Length: 422
Image (cartoon, rainbow, N blue to C red):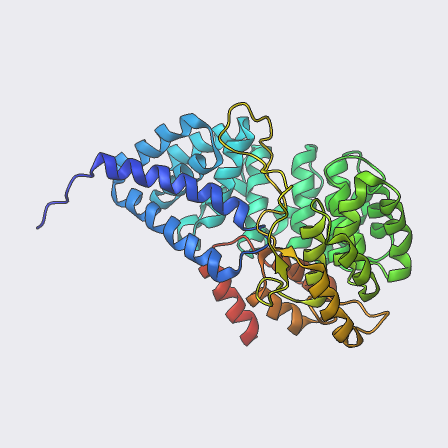
């Protein structure tokens, strides 16, 4: 019998470092504006290769990944958790979950690792999380079930009535993502929850499960409250509202200079062709042009880069974060990756094609939202467009499972093939 060669430390450490970098990169790419499923797949293959290299290194690989967690980053915790799950090392998984409960960055990485793992690796683990006396661990379990298109069962019903607000919020979210129409009444009852996160998740799930009354009013109220749920509440409202219903919301945003970006994004979500000329006007702005171009594409379905409807970046655009320690600008540019639209060429295109976009009809990626059209966007669109398509499917057919656009690319491809064949 051949003797297994001992791991080479420098190679294992490189796998750790590169795996963490790729995991961090992936966390951004799943919501990136110019990344398609096949591009995500190429990164996933590289990440999987590094994890395989660490896995075959055995105990040395796991020890190295845990040592790297001293940096307390999302990528490092992802690698350590992915290895612990692959080895089904319960002691390490317990330690990682305890660390994740104490640090948000670690929690993100650990959750992503559970979402990354395949069904065989997770067999029995998710059930343990859902049955745990720890509210935090039950919350993690409820996060994982929709990510794997698995229904958590009666555990979900109990969690909706939990004392702990974070667990309730996750339960409301899971009810809609899992298509549990039988829990619509529970979600509607959650619209009066004292916790803002619970109210938003209850409203979001209620509309996914078919309500178009009280939940819409609750979303409208959330748009008047400052906080992390204001923007997603607007997004859902614009996806649901008729053009007449959306008009006062858009006007309110346009009347506030601080909300102009939200108005541009909302115009793309609403899908009203009559907003296109206004969007083209915004494309000349260095601060708003790329976002306006993305909203234009959300309506028309055009790939500006592929059709040579883009221009070079203007010379006065701020460079954003860099390696200069004296530079206080460390925020990432949320428009990074979007093409710079060329307003005049786009205006010319619109003048020759506007007749194909009937006034009064909602357009998403060049056509009115339909099951077959949204499925096509899920197969071939950019990530932000795919996220929108998954949401449209739930709104078109209440009870539809929310498609996990952040799952490993090969798993998404398998699911899409099954949905096409169904």
